[in-house]
Image (cartoon, rainbow, N blue to C red; front, side, top):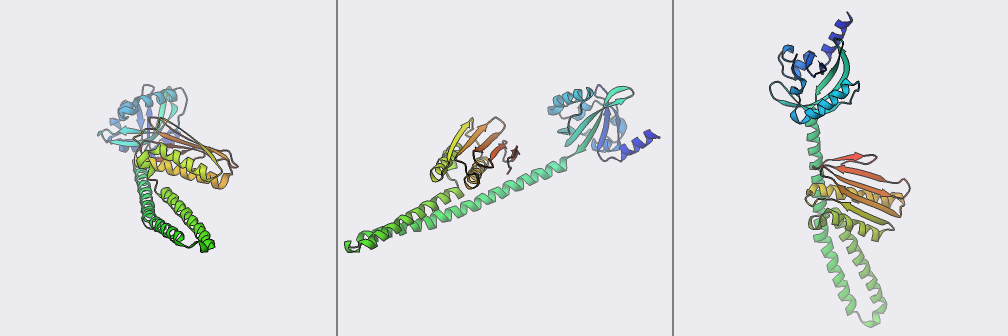
Amino acid sequence: MAEARYRAIIEAVPDAILVTDGDGFIVFTNSAAVDLFAAESRDRLIGLDMMKLIHLKDREDVEKRRQCVLLGFTPPFAERSRLRLDGSEFMSESRGVPVTWNGEPAILLVVRDITPRKQAEAALQNLSARLINAHEDERGRIARELHDDFSQSLAILTVDLELFRVRLPKSQQSFTDFLASQIQRTKEISSRLQTMTHQLQPFIIEHIGLVSAIRSLCNELSERYDLKIAFTHQDIPRGLSKNVSLCVFRIVQKALRNVIKHSGAQTALVELNATPAEVVVRILDTGSGSIRRAIKCGKGSGFSACGNGFAL
């Protein structure tokens, strides 16, 4: 009676459930496994080496996990590519649990198809990338308008005011001094506008690269604010894509501005390192509520947070 109940429960589970013996051959499946692996019947799966349903690139890792399970361990769910009997591939999430089958060590394997979820994640990542690109395009448009319109107008205004000041008679010395102060204010406004334009669209990245752009940012903020910023880098490839470089630059820019606004720190550190698989940014400061960020970026444009970091 108990066995009948267990079988009924297993058959009702939407995930594929299989049992493999100590050598990795399938000895039991539920109907969901038959559908998932396109087996037509249980007989097509019973006696089959489970490794034949694993993509070649994942077989070494699967064998290591299988041996761990046979020793009594229960590894967490793992994502991997699997093969159906018709040769098609799908992404799965699976977990093995140690059991006993006919008095011998065996593994109960739970497998679910996560292909729709992975497709949704890819679509969401693509949408995020498109939103970032749209955001940067809008920043670029505003930056160009500021540079081509307002910056040029301020430059012309400064020249006109200077010419007017020079032509004033010496008897108008007080007015001349006032005009000189206004010319200086106009130059300061023009300088701040130029800085804002560069912040909106860091053209410097395209010309001198990510490392030099971040170094320039650190130097600029150190000069303008009471904050000493140290910058170190190691093994940063020159072939980083524009999107990745821009995202890393924005992360450093935003984090340092948060340091300036909120931490009250006098020193900060920006570390930029790379491995063949990822770029890692670490930003630390010595202020109150110390910010400590470690952001990892893979070869693509996606970002993931580490520790108490944040993600794009």
